[in-house]
Length: 98
View 1: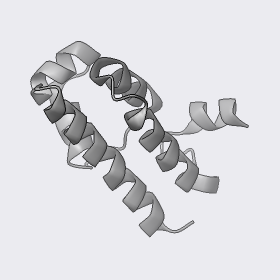
View 2: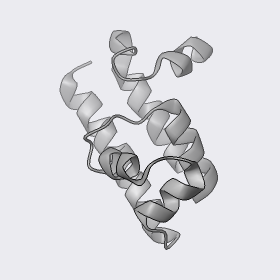
View 3: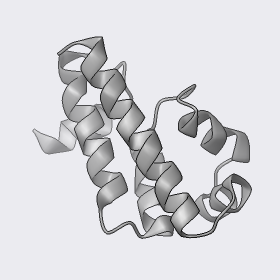
C-alpha cells in the first residue's frame, strides 16, 4: 500500500459523494442536515480536508441512496489503508470485516 493508493481511494470517495449529492439536487447544507452532520464537515470531506468515517459513509449512503456506490467507495478506501487502518478511521470497519 502506498499513500498514492489511499489518496486515490479518498479522491474517489469524495467524487462519488459530490456526484450523488448533485444528482439528488442537494446542497452541502441540506445533505448535512439529513445526515445529522455539521455542513462544514460535509464540505471538508468533499474537499478532502477530513477523512470519511464509517458513520459518515453509512449516513451518506442512506440519505443519497446511491445503490451502494458511496459505501463501496468507503470500503475501497479502507481496503487501501492496510496496516494503517487506525490512521484512516477504518477501525470499526476493519474489525468487523476480519
